[in-house]
Image 1 (tube, rainbow, N blue to C red):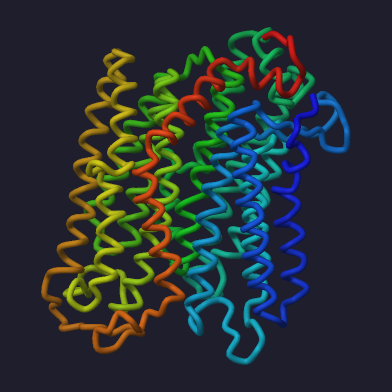
Image 2 (tube, rainbow, N blue to C red):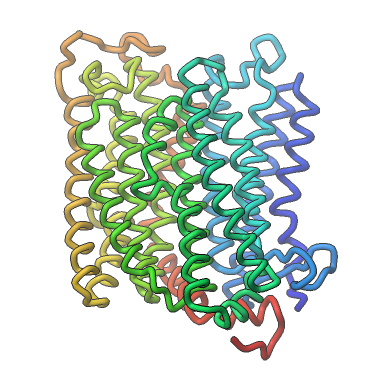
Length: 517
């Protein structure tokens, strides 16, 4: 079925790939790379906004790549959740790129001599954006796998930029874990295709129910394991706190904000479309509880802000998994809302941590102090998203958690209620973790007497420059603005959840009107 805005859908992937080629060709002209990157991302943001409106008002926008029918070739599908994810991912990528450009001589694209010492940075960021978008809009399992591999290649390059031994070691661990999850995912795809004769999601939704229950369970488990590794779900989360903090602030920010959410998105798509009557919901509930609790227990004992945020990232993946495991429209709507919230908040906090490093020379709270006096602007920029992450009302962190708790209470099962209790405990401990950082780094007297040992001397926050303050402040403002529009946003996520649970709208958009399950 041809949809009115289908012509826009492939551009979400084509534009960043073409932009990556242009940026690589312009390796000797940093200003050209910057212009290409920001122009491409801006166009993607506009396209995604139009497609969100179209998907909300007219239904999912579908394109058959090359004119091939769904059972013959690749299908790209932009429904409400896909469009929303592209908007949020593009927003944070633009902010991170702006922050990196604003770092000047300490960034990856220093142009003090007119040339970039690391010309692959801009092309790699655009390839990363293409990989993320590919995963969000893919209508078949193998194309999702292709998106994952694009992410893996780009993220390894970004993680090891600078070539230090610590970064290469962390990058090696990340790649090995990612390759393992990709191998499991590829094996699952092979099993699905051999059993059903297709990897198209819409066709699978029709055919998979005819398989023996044991075969379905094995397929589901393998897919979930592959996605869970990428999403850092416990017990497959140990790689994340050791991998992300080694990278520079902008790279860590985009990784923390986006990469794990790609795994969560894949779980949402597969669970709702292929396994609506899941026999593994109890397993997911246990995984969500353990991910929350183990992650936050790791966070509260960390002195380094980056490692603390990495552990809270793991713990809050548990909230999203909780919404998926509940298996209701309310739970799914809250999970999607929380994914949007967490992408923005986590990215913001890692960018602010980069500012803290520039002011104090370290992200270790044992070496920081008096930052509220040295740089009040950085204090404000940290405090707002930190309280949001901790779930203080009226921020979106509070609203998302309330939605998840309500869905758990509506479920009524003893396991769901246990996860509800774990969710409340995790929220309180998250608030404790960020308050501990706030007290030690911003208010306490530093035992070493450091008052600005980093690039900032004498405690003048203006020396940070607008180049890094504007992108970070913009993201903070967006997180606050999200609270203002939380009602309409929650309405969109609810409508997205309704369509995901019904499945029929997705099938009709891809296969045509009148198609039944």
